[in-house]
Image (cartoon, rainbow, N blue to C red; front, side):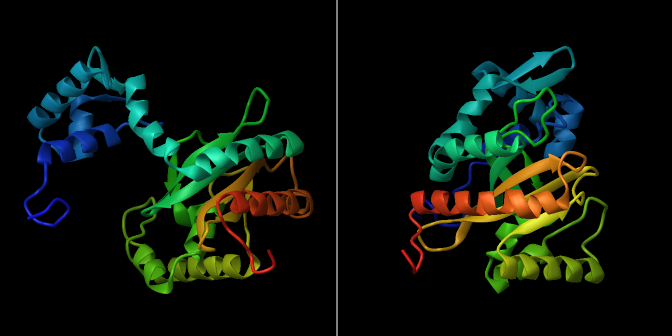
Length: 261
């Protein structure tokens, strides 16, 4: 059997080690052994061996009863980001957008049911909104996520909703899925997504697609702002045209050529 064929060529210890690393998030940056074992669905003894191994390798730190990631864990993520053209290409454009609108802007890609933020330019104020690089959010609840869902083939979109869950236990209700499908359909027609306090109270965001050489959206660009600082009309009249123009430039850098080019 060659490498890559499905079968017994699985390294379970590697799978479990990655599962342990994945338990640490922005919301769960410090975890006890029991918490790691529960989140990774591992026995305590197995989780302990993995954590101690990761500690010896410099990926995990231990203080008292809690474990947390060390800076070396960034090596894995940055290896991915450095191989992702959109992250490197987009940053200068994000900085210019942020300076112009005085709000934070981000780029995200679709990964399973979630979007993952891969680039960001924060606004230069004491309190800045917007998740840091690496943050995962449910695709259906974000403007960038709806942009990415609108780019999926019908069968892939069906698979996404079949596997999609709300924060509460249980699968999406038929009514909720119907509303989400209508929202995604509107995004596909309009070419942008505008969300008003749907992910978080007081936060508005607008997103547009970033197209690759094949003309398919492989990432999304978004600007977010607190509702008290920017009205919906300002989003539509000022921010949307700016990010549409910027997205066209980034898409050209990513290799996209429109029929008019």
